[in-house]
Amino acid sequence: MKTFIYKNIRIAYNDAGKGATLVFLHGFLENKNMWNPYLNFFASKYRVVSIDLLGHGKSENLGYIHIMEDQADMVFALLSELRIRKATLIGHSMGGYVALAFGELYPDHLKGLVLINASTRADSDERKLNRERAIQVVKKNASAFISMAINNLFLEQTRERFSKAIDVILSQALETSVQGVIAALEGMKIRNDREVLLHFGPYYKMIIAGKYDAIATEVDILEETKEADVATHFLNCGHMAPLECEDEVIQLIFNFLKKK
Ligand code: MLT
Image (cartoon, rainbow, N blue to C red; front, side, top):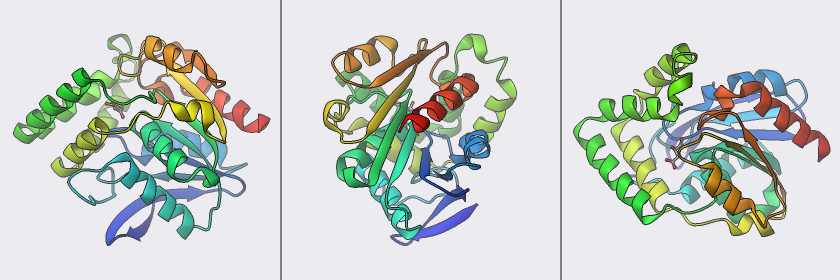
């Protein structure tokens, strides 16, 4: 693990391999370790960077609300520090929202955008309300919230198959500070709608979705991508495609990179 000081806080990341750069961004309550199999696979051909987002993993908190633009600015600062001019960003769920913010703020520095289990749309009013409720629960009992949230990321049918992985993810997620959890919920709640980037973003794009994803649903993703010229793949998995459908996701990213 490497660290970098950004606005007086520590940011943790991994950096392996040489070549064109791939940057992997994890989702809510996750951390850079979720991408280790991806680093192992891609680092023989590419430079692969995975980052603990603000308030997650071993990265510290920057504030009480981490808007997606804050996260994207931090990613850009790290890439500048590493002298990486252009990269393909691969984001899972909240990491996808961060990648979208990066695509809006730093289009010249983005070569490709891969969204996994991530909607390009803003939260609906109902989802905003749910975030509010979640914040109240976190304030009362953060560990109960985290345990429930991690379990909910997985399909009921696959929970047993991935029970070991879930235990690891959960024990790491439980280390997330209350401030980090709330800052992410607040940030996701007020994130901008970025569907327009699917049409006009001047970079290669691919969407990987889960047929059984209850968060970025098949219906929503179909609607968002209907008119967009974006390669969209629906896999037989839920919200945790990078884990539940690891081989297919790796293969899709591999093919996507080969074509560019
Ligand atoms: C995530 O997995 O990053 C979050 O569940 C995304 C969200 O809540 O919108």
